[in-house]
Length: 189
Image (tube, rainbow, N blue to C red; front, side, top):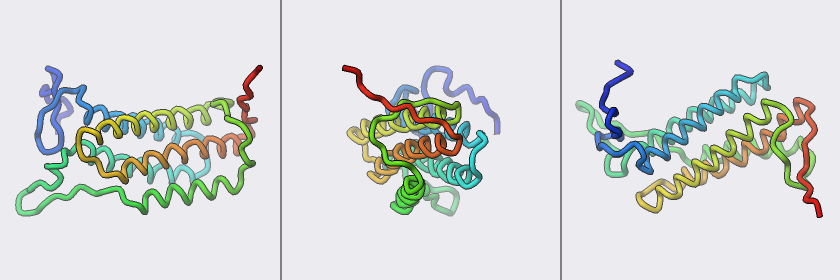
């Protein structure tokens, strides 16, 4: 497979199923932001962190590829013929959300209660996690906008919302694991 096709040189790209749209199309923006999030999670996974967390992050990266391919597919093209078979794009389901919730609960059990907002930072690894969390929130906002124009499975929205929660709690866990003091945001009078 050739990397360059030259078909996008004039600012258009193909969605799954062949429809051509401008590269600024909200659907392209949605799956492009999911791809950006996936890259930051890969960067986080490359850090010196617990192997169990690395495995969870790898699972999440695979799930983000499923979400990206779902978002790259207009609803009317979800089932395409390929020779004699029909291709069906995998879907994110409630089990994926439950996994995130279980991971959040396990991490939270080992963390002190939150009394204030926490400022991002303190260690590069923790900061990468907060950047991923913010990209996840942006992806969620873009997917919400897409859902106002076109059908989007609401489980994707739930997954992204829960993933940003997971990344926040993970940042707190990484702070604890790396023995980094959390900086509390305390408003000044």
